[in-house]
Picture 1 (spheres, rainbow, N blue to C red):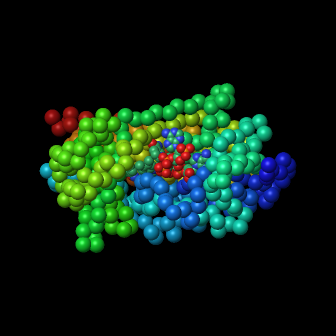
Picture 2: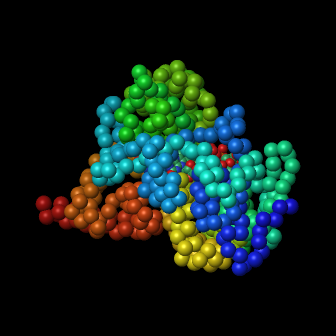
Picture 3: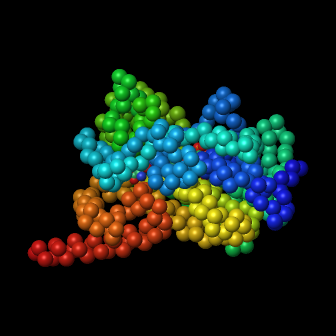
Length: 437
Ligand SMILES: Cc1cc2nc3c(=O)[nH]c(=O)nc-3n(C[C@H](O)[C@H](O)[C@H](O)COP(=O)(O)OP(=O)(O)OC[C@H]3O[C@@H](n4cnc5c(N)ncnc54)[C@H](O)[C@@H]3O)c2cc1C
Ligand SMILES: NC(=O)C1=CN([C@@H]2O[C@H](COP(=O)(O)OP(=O)(O)OC[C@H]3O[C@@H](n4cnc5c(N)ncnc54)[C@H](OP(=O)(O)O)[C@@H]3O)[C@@H](O)[C@H]2O)C=CC1
Ligand SMILES: Nc1ccccc1C(=O)C[C@H](N)C(=O)O
């Protein structure tokens, strides 16, 4: 047994050990935050070090990074390296059935979301000498009484480890979270939506992007949609989101072509009919889950962050951003409460739960906006009115998308304001219509 914990309440961060379980996006960033504060950090990641791995598994390589994520990276000096490699996206590009394309800007000039590649993140934490990365360490179980964690190593042996604080960043199916389920008054819900997703690649044409690169391309077909996001290698990753029932109706190469002919005809020459027939069946459609829980902490011993605390459906492009903001909010509370875990952890739950639950709901809503509302003239008109009001009264009226993507307005406050603004705007529109009659 390796006992890293100090069991000494007076000890400072200098000799306290924080175990970060999960070396994904959020775990790696968290390791940097704790190391920067002077803690000894041990990261445990179930996968092997991808620098040594022969086959690198993983999906959805491109992720939309927006203001919240950038602010969190900035605090530990990681923003610039990532931003310099990102592709800015300033608008949606709507592809209608007849092939016309119409852009819808996300915000004002200069307000962009950056597309970054899913990083081989854990290594960013290695710049701190106080951080140790333990790859091929899969958490099997841990004890809420003693705090002892049991890890399975690649050679099949087990290792038991203790630390002063356990930070669960082990993703949507968190093993750390399993122990929370047995606690009294722990709330938990998990919902699979009836839609799945499938990824396809659109190659470059003569070494150039096949479509305009600085857009998030959408083919909104009301009950389902396809989107395309640009990659650094000039390919696009196209993602088809659709009910599983519909996926089951397409079982042969010819049916794939027929389906694309009917709904996304402009993409067939760009993806290539042969590639389409082949790649469509490469992987089965993947499920999407939304997980909400509360509280995020267990006494002064353990805290959940990132997807482990709140897996959201991907439609707002905020999952990683919310997880990064978790690290930033935790850090702000550590400043306020002098790193006293017994005060910091409950405060983190109090502050963060309403916001993460709000973005989970907004992410569900944005699917309907992307696949259906963007086809509606009434929606486009309302958006136009909101943008105009925002120009006239920039502080009073702020479009929802702007609050979520380009500010750090707390997610739950953004929702509240959105409902209020909706009402005010509808009142204005209706009374002007009335006056006009
Ligand atoms: C299709 C899709 C598109 C998305 N697009 C976006 C986007 O554009 N923008 C955005 O902000 N978000 C996006 N997201 C969400 C984003 O991927 C997640 O929110 C983000 O990966 C969460 O990071 P995390 O570190 O919490 O979890 P993960 O990235 O899942 O990392 C968890 C880590 O823990 C490790 N682990 C798991 N179990 C154990 C164990 N028992 N022991 C030890 N280690 C373990 C895993 O190997 C993994 O490395 C998207 C998600 C999907 C599915
Ligand atoms: N919100 C969502 O709908 C989704 C979110 N994501 C997020 O993106 C992250 C990265 O994606 P990716 O690299 O593709 O991760 P994976 O889907 O490959 O999952 C990572 C690990 O989670 C475990 N796992 C996967 N599916 C399940 C399941 N249904 N039930 C229990 N455990 C499961 C597996 O552990 P084991 O080795 O023990 O089997 C797997 O190794 C995910 O971890 C998640 O946080 C990913 C997909 C959907
Ligand atoms: N990254 C994503 C992955 C999957 C689905 C959507 C996104 C988005 O970013 C959507 C964007 N926020 C939009 O509203 O147009």
